Amino acid sequence: MARSGLAVASLLKKYGGDVFVTDVKNSPFLAKETEELKKLGIEYEIGGHSHNSIKDKDFLVISPGVSFDIPILLEAQEKGIPIFSEVEVAFWLNQAFIVGITGTNGKTTTATLIGEILKEDKREVKVAGNIGVPFSSVVEEVSSDGIIVLELSSFQLEKIEEFHPKVASILNITPDHLDRYSDFKSYKDAKLRIFENQTEEDFAVLNFDDDESRGIENFSKGEKIFFSTINELDPGVFLKDGSLIFSAGGGSFGIFEGKEEKIIEATQIGIKGPHNLSNVACASAISLILGVKLGSIRNALQNFKGVEHRLEEVSTISGVKFINDSKATNVNSVWYALQSIGRPIILIGGGRDKGGDFTKLRDLVKDKVKALILLGEAKEKMKNELGDLIPTFFVSDMEEAVNLSLEKASSGDSVLLSPGCASFDMFDNFEHRGKVFKSAVEKLKK
Picture 1 (cartoon, rainbow, N blue to C red):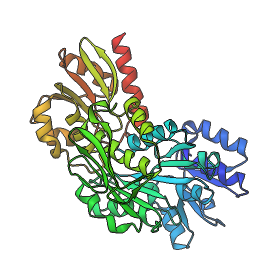
Picture 2 (picture 1 turned 180 degrees about the horizontal axis):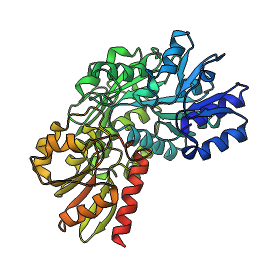
Picture 3 (picture 1 turned 120 degrees about the vertical axis):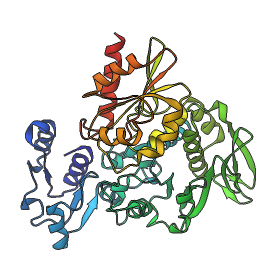
Picture 4 (picture 1 turned 180 degrees about the vertical axis):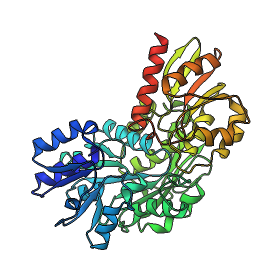
């Protein structure tokens, strides 16, 4: 009964479906959701999944966070009942041109930026998917002349059948969600499904700098376009002499043919950090494929300042800058965050472990972090893997973490919330965690 479940239930009901919704949570947590289902005339159950959830059902639609190995889904699979993801069902009703973005890190920033570029170019566009806006809630709002940019998680791609983005990109692939997948290959295979239904008329946009991404070009039948911040490409989008450049490679690239041209100087780009330069290169490549004018791309890149909960500057107290990076739910995200901040750092981390290897952060932590403040289920593991390098403290909640961080900081330092873990041990989601952090900072400032 979360966002995507309610959205797809409403959509199916509208098209004449006999819909039943089931959730393991109990009524105190679902008052708003059950009220909405009552208004829509949709049957539901809470507190567990009964046999009513699969009896006489043509198919099941699962929310991204639901594991396939729960008993009711195993029974459904034994009975041959099809199981689909919400993005698959929404796609059945889609008329728009679909751009799909997946990867371990950078999805939200890249998808949002593409949306801003298209708006600047006066295109009809919606950004949805794993970004917090269900595909099902916007699919009827965009015509066949419009574009829907979808941020897609591995969970959403696991149960697709017909879903087919005309432009698909995998930004990067590093180990993540190993609490759900048996190994890295299983996680990678889920990501690769974004290319599954592409044809020769489609495009696959890939990161030339990422070993895993560069090795998967043959999984798409579409035309391959690479982006890079290290290597010159022909064709492709790349960094050269401090500017972002595209080359059509002697062929056609969107509305451009056979030439190399500067998109923007790197210093003019609104969002900072090496990882964001890569995200910008990808967004630019996709925008060029879509025929967006260079002026629109430049304006959007200059004006875009990033997304909430991703290296978001919250406030400065006594010369200490507080930065909200709650969206950093894996080790690599923390690695990028630590690279992007020049000041000495007080790092707030922890949450629900996803099988991450925090030892990969040791060099950066030793070099840049003054103190480590930990909360949540993974705090012991993080202390074991990093705590010998710097002073490390346990706290019980976010407010205590924020207050202690200011005590340990000096003017000119940064306090960085970059958890490296999922939020579900203490919060509804990473947005909730970020908002609690920001609220604690504002309270401390007052």
